[in-house]
Image (cartoon, rainbow, N blue to C red; front, side, top):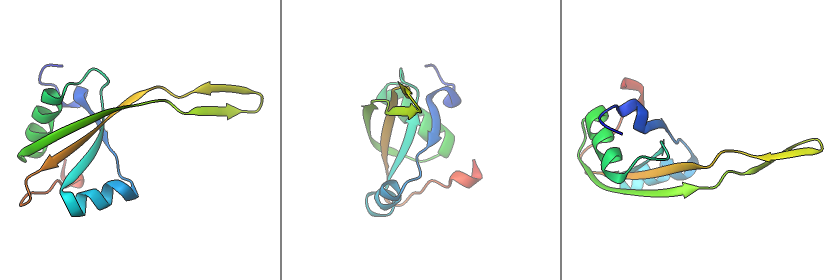
Length: 96
């Protein structure tokens, strides 16, 4: 993935569960490129947000079934990363 941060991190995941993790455990969730490794994700978050990453956990998410009338199909599979940062730091998505 090299050092192009935009190619690794697609978007932050802002949900009720991720907001709770952010406040309680200093964990932030991101939708990332399917081929991104934990090292790529760590370097991208540290370089883009200027924080110290303690831990990166990833999970491959299966695409959901969607229907439109009689036809049906699946959304694309995607990868989610949960990044734990130091307790004295925070990520502000509006400044980036």
